[in-house]
View 1 (cartoon, rainbow, N blue to C red):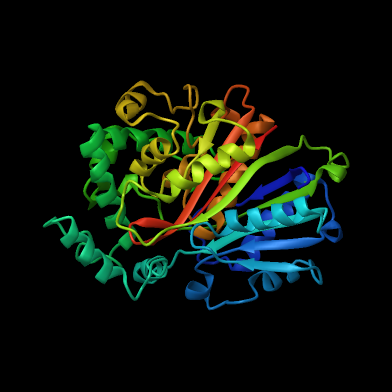
View 2 (cartoon, helix red, strand yellow):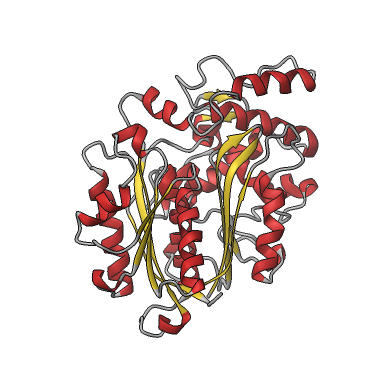
Length: 407
């Protein structure tokens, strides 16, 4: 494999754009990435497009890359359409990295986008709920409840109609960590406060206002211990990156950000909560990059809910479980802490237009490693990581991509 660098990034502000179509969203982030790299459209040799729920939300299936990119004059080149739940664009990035690293192309464009907002929220929740085994999910969970002799139903009434079924799944999983490590609802609220503080300093974030602990706790119950402000919002958005081989990286003026490791994994149909995709995939990513969890300077994790942030840190081996509460209370994961997490505001504040999320994380890492993150800038970062999962298989994530970058 050849060394591969990111030489340009672009992103829309995540948010609700009922009057914008997918072509507009894609054009905005791609134009920004081209300008950032000082690259012309005809210099792109291949394009990789990640999007998940576009067919269900807009009706556009199968040729999303060709439809959106041809509208802005990018045509004829090989285009790859990638769908992998919330990990769609990070999977597209991995696929592009593999091709450039193998010598198939020298310069490639990677794009992630999603139109997820609709005034009919049930439509959005139905689309999100398709990222499960729709034939087996209820049967599996019923069997799981019997095996674990729990009287509590994992899925509450209204799941899939008034809220995403994922919220009930996240809540159930979170309760196990509360029991094991003494974490409380207030701990998760503190994470949400941090996320919104970081989002307030991110011009690309859907929510750009700081909130108080009391506001988070009183923002409305979703599925205990989750409140509304602990959950990622529905929204639209897009993000793009331009990658190239080491051999041509010197042509670009931007400081290259190098891909040190990139791994993809899939879940298991298992009821074993102690055996998760994050736990299995983390060591592979660190081994590929030749680093340890302690070598990271910051990380963007898939916090579809605020508890997921600290759970991921534990499962990646970055935060010892028994120290999780102290990490939250003492500010270890703040921008100026020893291990900054989700400096972008994370999914909870930056937003979660699912097909764009992975590249949105990568956009943040590039900005941090270049020293261009403004008020949320980490001090002298050298190594950053992204963690992006999607879908549910059993009680495990269905798909996941981990990336490690260095400057």
